[in-house]
Length: 93
Image (cartoon, rainbow, N blue to C red):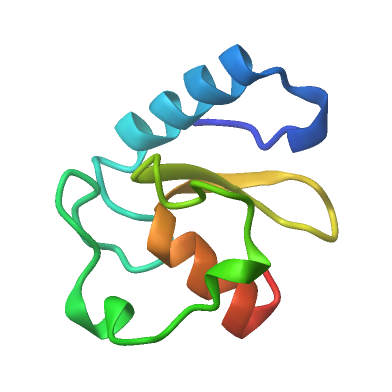
């Protein structure tokens, strides 16, 4: 079982390793939509429009992100990049 850690204490190599650990722990299922991370996010997610100007350049360039809670800074799981955008823009996560 993975223990959540403070996202902003991790360097890029640690973030990548933790993301990969979450992917395995989650059996390749997205933390948010519960669909396979090896596939694009489902249509019910991609039908929701996102404002890409709210995100860093190339935000969708890496298809899988390490999700963290922006209030607690604790990691939560691995998500599709698009799911990550939906979580932040629509739900403030």
